[in-house]
Image (cartoon, rainbow, N blue to C red; front, top):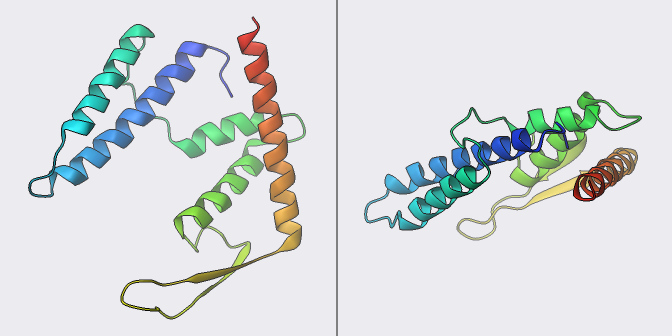
Amino acid sequence: MGPDDRKVRVARRLAAKQTELNLRRNVMAKQQEADLSYYDRRLADLRDLAQQADVSANSESTQYWQIVEKAGALIPAMDGATAGAVWGACSGLAHGDDASIGVFEIEVQPPSGESTQVAQVNPSIPYLTFFVQVTHMMYGAGLQLYQQRTTV
């Protein structure tokens, strides 16, 4: 959502995407007979986009949590720490990181079959209500900024 300077936002996003693609490409490169052409094409496309936007995709990548905290600080009645906490909990749940989602009770079930394991997540209703409210405020603020920036 921030900063207002479009070039900074574009450069930051392209740098994050380049970091992500490089990490994936490096993992694939370690596998024998891996076809890296997809990653090479995507990285070339990324360089082309950066050139068209007159920014560098090689700038230092900003971590997603930093972007979320800065965005949260721009939202009335919220702060960066709250936005970061909600994002961290949702991200932890999405990635199965039970250490970062202390607001949930997680019960890992015994494996069923050879490689499938199920985790039962028991949410706290007050926390979920809070998360939904914060997420709603963040999306609303983001959509308002998008509308402002596209009508300028």
